[in-house]
Image 1 (cartoon, rainbow, N blue to C red):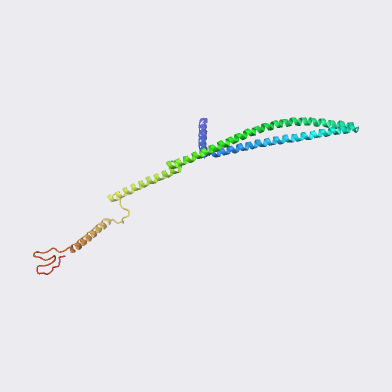
Image 2: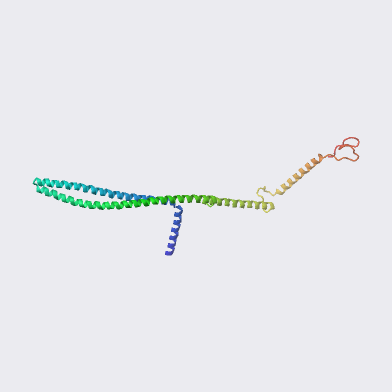
Length: 259
């Protein structure tokens, strides 16, 4: 049972693969792959922009703290000059805390700078790959389009195309059917002529032979009448002792030609 199931599954995958291969246009697949690569490149660029933005923010924060430490140092000196040692101590404490944060920010800035440079190189490599794929994609598409056009032209010229093949089959079927109908009509004519098959166009009643005989008699009568008319138009034959021209009698009188 398992073996049959596997065979059915394999057959289904083969059929589906063939159907997909017929429906799949390589040019569309290449365009889709190129669009996906562009999307990936765009995401990497956005990530690079985010890292650069973070680095810039850390840099600005460090600059603000540096300015703050300078101001706190001035405040500590002013407080100490005014006899406010407590204020001077507080200002110096804040200055030390700010200096510690500046060190952390500088380390973070260094890390972000390294990450930004690394991502910048990745963007450059990915951009080069996308550009190379685009060139290759256009070359393959042009080659496929040319091959497709050449194949269609060859199919049209040789008549092996799917549509032309269907037309050829339709013409062959029509020709075969016409020959069959002609053969059938000829066979029916022969059967009717031999009397083996009654002609359905003749009137019923069994008097076809009488009608045929009457038609023959009428035709014979027409022939006899026409023959008599032609005889009457012939010149009369000369009788004995006639020396004159045609139709002249011995006494010089013309005789009427016998009918």
